Image 1: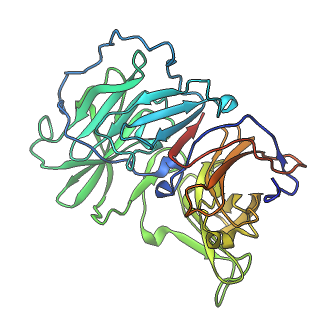
Image 2: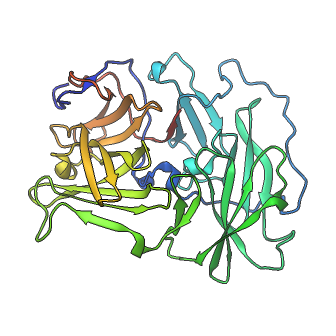
Image 3: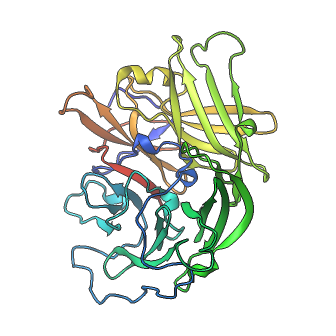
Length: 399
C-alpha cells in the first residue's frame, strides 16, 4: 500500500485475516481495565447461599470446536444476537479453513456493558448485573460460562440494609471482584475473591465510600498496583501544548489522574491541526505505570483524521507526573486519505501492532477494510496490507 508511511518502522507481511474490531463506544481503554462492566438479571442464588452450580457437564466439545485456552486474540462477537467470545491465533487469522474457538456467554448479558474487567484475570469467571451480581464459571467441556453463584442484597447477612449491588469489576490480572454497595445515595466498595470454592457471604466491605453519581459518571478505578481508588474532578490534571488562543498544527491536550504509587490512570489525549480540528485518542495498551499505546479510532470520515497528521493515528504517550508533561512518539502515521483505523491491538510483548483501516467512502456498503501488521522498534520498512478485516467485534485482549 502507498497510502501509509512508517518512516523508520518495519511492516511485516502476514497471513490474511478476518475481522476483529474495537468499537468506539468502548473507548476509554483504559484501558480496557479501567472500564465499567455492569448489566444483568436477578440471579437465583444469594449471599449466604451454598447452592453452588459447579458440577461438570459430561458433554464433550465437538471435533471442530477446540477447547478454549484463552491464548491469542480474544474479542467480543457482535454480528449476532448470540453473545460469544471469539479466540483467534494471530498466525492463522483469516484462514477460513481453520475453525476459530468460540466461547458462549450468558444469554442475559449485553455486549454494550461487557469489558475486559467483566472477566477474571484467567478468564475463568465472568461477573455482570445490577441490583444482583451474577457470577458464572467457565466450563471447558462445553466452552461456555455456566451458573456459579450470585451476590444479592435480597437475602443473607445484609438484607436489613436495603442496598443494591452495582458496577462489578475484576481487579486487573486477578480473580478479586469489586462491587459497589449502594444505599441511600452512598456507595461503599466491597470485594470478594472468586474461586471454585467461593461462598457469597465472603463479600467484605472496604473503607472506600463516596456519594453515588446517578448520571452514570464513573467515580473509581484501579490504580497501577491493581487497588481501587476514588477520584474527584479536582484531582484530574489537564495540560496543553499552547498557552493562549486556539490550538494549531501539532498542538495537543492531555489529561490524567496520578495515583499514590507513582503511576497515572485514566489518561486522555487530543491532537489538533492548523484549523483547530482535533482527534481524541483511546488507550489501547498500558506499557508501564506512566506509558501507553494510544490510537485515534475513527469512522473513516476524512475530516476526522485531521488532528492526527503530525502525531499519527497510533502513538506512544509517556506522561511525567512530576513535571506534568507528556512525550508523544508516532508509531503509525495517518493514512493519505486521512481515514483512521477502526481498531488497533498490541501484542503482549509490545513487539507487534495490528490495525484495521477502512478504504473508500464509509457511507457506501462496498467499502473495504484492510489489515496491517507493524513491528514496533524496527528501523526500516513501509506498510503492506496483508488481508481483510472488519469492525464487528470488540477486542478485549491479546494474550
